[in-house]
Image (tube, rainbow, N blue to C red; front, side, top):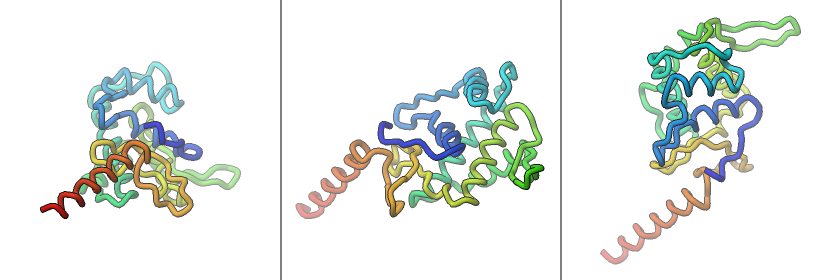
Amino acid sequence: MSGSAAAPGELELVRAFVNTLDVESGEDALASPGALELWFAERGLLPRGVAARPAETRRALAVREALRSLLAANNGGRPDGGAARVLDSAAGRAGLSLRFGPEGSAGLQPGAGGVDGAVGWLLAIAADAMAAGSWARLKACRAEGCRWVFYDRARNRSRAWCSMAVCGNRAKARAHRERGRGRSG
């Protein structure tokens, strides 16, 4: 969607990952293990030449949709009941644990390599954003057929749609039609 501003810092990786599926068109940029490998490698999350297996690809796509579910909850929706289980399982496979740096920093890091480790980095970024308070601004569009992820930069955190000109306009037109039907019936 054109109205989707980038998220700050590493959180942009999470936004971009979830947006690899265009719900409206059905176009999936990660439809194959090779596409997943390339996407992770281009972003420095996976060394080039590391092959993704079909099962790893399916699990990564399940994580993508579990994250989308949490992001819909950030926008007034209800998260899928299985989303937490999918993410917990992925965090376990990634071997996420708290690591301390010599300069006094601390953060989650995956102990696993490969695709599970790459997914783990995304989960670590999400956890850091939750702790920092920026996670609540990352939202999935309220439009059922869209669900594009955007970063809400509105001062009052009230943005509901990825694009007011497209999804917001559709929702307002639909509400107007429904109000008109209610008056005439």
